[in-house]
Length: 472
Ligand SMILES: Nc1ncnc2c1ncn2[C@@H]1O[C@H](COP(=O)(O)OP(=O)(O)OP(=O)(O)O)[C@@H](O)[C@H]1O
Image (cartoon, rainbow, N blue to C red; front, side, top):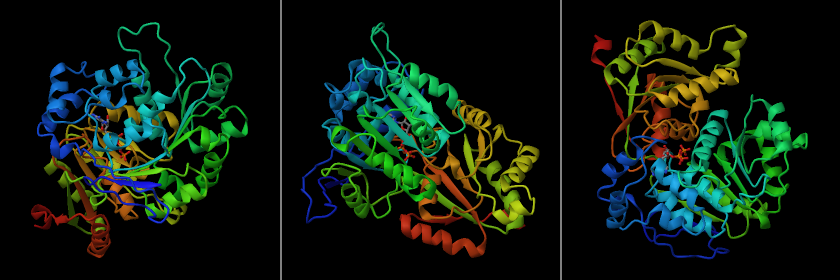
């Protein structure tokens, strides 16, 4: 196994004694692409509906000496998928795509370890499309995700790529099934029986039910992706099935396994375990992009010290001062004690307060675990379509891609540095953009040392905001 680190011409062997050390000189896109900002803003301006990439975009990508996605993928990914990717606006690869796609397309198992918003989804989806036999109606790729929201999002991107572009009418395409918690599993069972889809995007709970009922067959699975893999392994409920999935159902020699996350604590140990436990093949590659900078550099971190009683007013003041284009207020889970006392969760209090006092133009929307499937789906699609102010627990902190989000507020501090990184990573998600986005934590004096610990672990600096008008 080999670890590919993002620094130019740098290779970090995970376990030098048993590794094959390969030299890999990455063509890290951002530093060598002078016009990357304007080029990418052009590409991303109309997400999913961008006009077909113009020859000028190709010329500029070439001028910057970066291979295009087409150049990396042609011959492996079907032409209609590549054309569709370009129509959407995916022309120039991000650093993680640039580094991982040649390896993925050569058949290697990979651990994709790169910053939030770096484009890991497109990297593994292009591999999935390269591996499919479009003529076989059988499940060939399984993508496992931790939350319904991330599942809906991955499904949306996969379906957008699978939509036939003009000129390919009549060509056989593939179907993508979203098998998500709270969904209509009865209907999915019939669908799986009648005409199995080629790609299934699933949360572990629903997947478990389908496998127990023998409704889903995975013997023909060619690609297995576990997204947010560290989160999945941390949840004791999910870990048993996850292990089973990685070792049963399809032989690892016949399938490619991709494990992705922005955070993989003790990653050397994890890579070692993957091989030892036979979750991946022996020559699994750890693609680690930008290991010295786990946090995207275009984020500006701030904190405000205030008492718990002042927190709502402070949040309101910040919102009125910042005027976010779109923002997320992260709130901690309600404690068992507070539930037993019959108290309302903080999310409800914040929503009621903001709906009564926030006079800004953004709509205030709630997203939390307890909401039913339809209400959560509505919140999700509303948020994607236009900017709004989302009040959410940590269910929105993993994988959620809302590129227009400019501001994050930690109404309650997250439990760990890893959680801080994932919450912060919901902003600053437009690849190649240098626009500053901000993460502001509302803390008590006593919590300052916790935030300091996060700063040390994640290597970022937080600036104190002193709000004059609140103290007067
Ligand atoms: N090559 C590309 N060109 C332009 N935009 C891209 C490209 N690849 C990905 N994007 C966009 O970048 C954004 C972030 O991508 P994605 O959601 O895959 O990040 P991620 O690495 O999975 O992040 P996280 O770890 O937070 O889940 C998305 O809006 C996606 O459409």
